[in-house]
Amino acid sequence: MDLAQRALPPMSAAPKGFSLESDLPAGFAAFYKTLHDTFTPRQRAFVESRKRVLEASQAGTLPTYLPPSEATTTDWKIELPPWAVDQRNQMTGPADEAELCVKMLNSGAPGVMLDLEDSMANEFDHTLAGIDNVVAALYGELTYEDKKRGGTVGIKESKTVTFTRVRGLHLHQAGLYDEPTSASLFDLALLVYKLDFKKLKHPLAVYIPKSESAEEALWWRDVLQTLATYKGEAKDYIKCMALCEAHPFAFQLEEFAYNLREHLIGINLGRWDYMASLIHFNLNDPAWVLPDRNTIPHDVPFFQNLRTLIPSITHKHGMLAIGGMTALYPSREDAELNERALAVLAQDKKNEAMCGMDGAWTGHPDQNAIAVAQFPEPNQLASYKPGFDPHPDMRPSVVGVGKTTEDGTRAAVRVVIRYRNGYINGKGASLLDGYMEDLATDRIYRLMIAQRIKHGVTTAAAVSKLFDEELEKLIASGKDAGTPETLREARKIGEEMITIGAFDPV
Image (tube, rainbow, N blue to C red; front, side):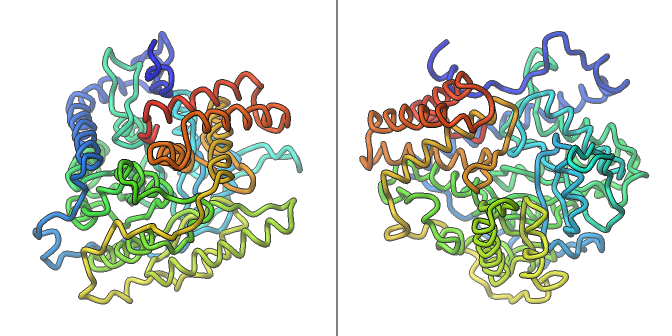
C-alpha cells in the first residue's frame, strides 16, 4: 500500500457479508437499485468535474461568475412555508448521539439540524444509527437515559423545525454493490424509505452540503422529486436548505437556487468549510497564505463580502439566509471561558444580522437564547433592497490580516492530531480547548500547515518536529480519548494527509 492510500481515511463501507436484501427493510434493495443505476453515474461525473475545476484554479484559472441568465435576470420567487419563516437559530449536532439530538430538540431553538455528515464519523454503522435516530426524532419518539439524574428523557412538543443533513456529493458508499454508490443518494433513499410522512409535523426538510456548481442542483432536484413521487406526495414536497461551503459555489448561488427553486428555502454560509475551500483553490498563490486561524477576525472581508451577498440573493427570491457556526463553546465548568464564549457569540451573530442574515447556527443549548436575540423576528426578508452588487470580490486581499506565528502552526498541528484521534475513536466532532472542532476545522488546519510549507513560512522538517513534540505532550497528558496507539495513528494520518495534499473534505 502506497503513502497516498495509507494516509487517506478509508471510504465508508458496509461490513463484509452485509446484504441490502436481508439487513435493510424489506423491499429497499429493489427500490434502491433503480435509484443507484440512475443517479450514481451522474454523481461520479460531478466528482470528476470538481477535480478539473480545482486543478484549473490551482493552475491560475480561478472560479468566477457565470454570464447573465434567466436565473439572474428574471423576477422569480418562492413561497416560504409558514413553518419555516422563523429560523433565527438552528442548533446542529451529530445524528448518531441520541442524547445530544434530544437536548437540541428540547432547547427551544427555532430549528435543529441532525447531522449525518461532518460532525459524525463517516462509518457505516454510525450512518445507520444516525438515520434510525433521525426517524425517531422526526416522530418525536427519540429518547435517552439520563445517567446524572436518572430516568428516560424524551422530546418535548414544540414548533422546532427539524432538518437532516445527508452526506455530500463528494462521498461514496462502498460495500453495497461491486462498485461504490453515492453516499448522498443512500442516506436520502434509506431515510425516505423508512419514514411514514403522515407522522411528520412538517414536510421532510434536508440540508444539502458541499455543493460546488449550479448544475448539481438539478441532481438534487431530480432525486428529491423521485423520492417524493415514490411516497405519493407532490413532487415539491421535500424542502431543503443548501450550504455554501465551496469557493466555486459562491459564484453560482443564484443559479443554484433557481435550479432548485421548487425545494430550496434558504442558503447557509458554512464558513469553516468555505475557509478551507478558499485556501484549497488558492493554494499555489503566495498572496493567499492565511494567518493563525484564531487571529482572523469574524468580519474579515472574504467572509463579509459573501456574508452580505447571500441574503441579498436569497431575499430577492423569498428565501432565508442563515449564518455559520461560532466555534468557541460555552462551558458550565469554566466561568471565565463561558463569559468569553457567550460574548463572542453575541458579537458574531449581531454581525451576521447586520449583514442581513435571518439566523445562524449554534451547537450548545446555552447559546440558543443569545443567538435568537441578535436577529429580527421572524426574519429579514422585508429588508431586501434591489440594486445590490451581484458580483462582489470573493478573493479580497488577506495582507495584514491576523498574525502568523510558530505557536499558530503548533496549535494547528495539535488540533490535527487530536481531531483525527477523536475520529479514529468514533467522534466526528470534538470539543478541544474550548473550540468545537469538526472535519471542516481539521481541514482548515491541514491546509494552513500545507500553505506555510509550500510558501516558505516553515519547512516540512520543522512541521514534522512539531508533530513529534505535540504527540508526546498529548500522550503524557492522558486527556484525550483512546490510547497512545490511536494518538500515534492519528499523528501519522494527519501528517501524511498534509504531505500528499489530501485536502478534500473526507
